Image (cartoon, rainbow, N blue to C red):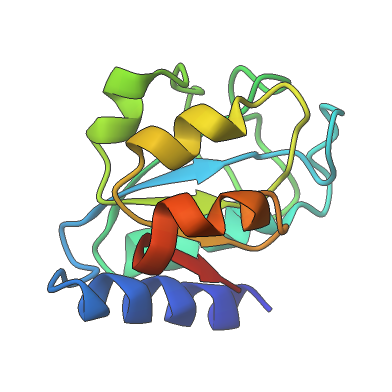
Length: 136
């Protein structure tokens, strides 16, 4: 599934005139599921690696995971970035990987340039986002 999601990210960026290479992507959520800090078996790690492999500049934001730790397959050496309007405006695309209830989804809808949502967290903002939202 991560390959499918990264293909959707590439398609959405491309449809808006932006290649994946050198695009800034913010992955929302590192944890395996909402409202926990458990990252074991989380697809977010593979998503990040695949995006980096395609030349994207990737960060993540997760209110439950302040920094990555070495796992069985991945060691990203990354820290969570704060989720603010200013932060969101810096990224070409936001990839929703975990739908934490602590995330201000309204703020994401208002300030993200493009969104690929794998968790259906943004559906109620479809009207506000229009063609800036892709459900994966």
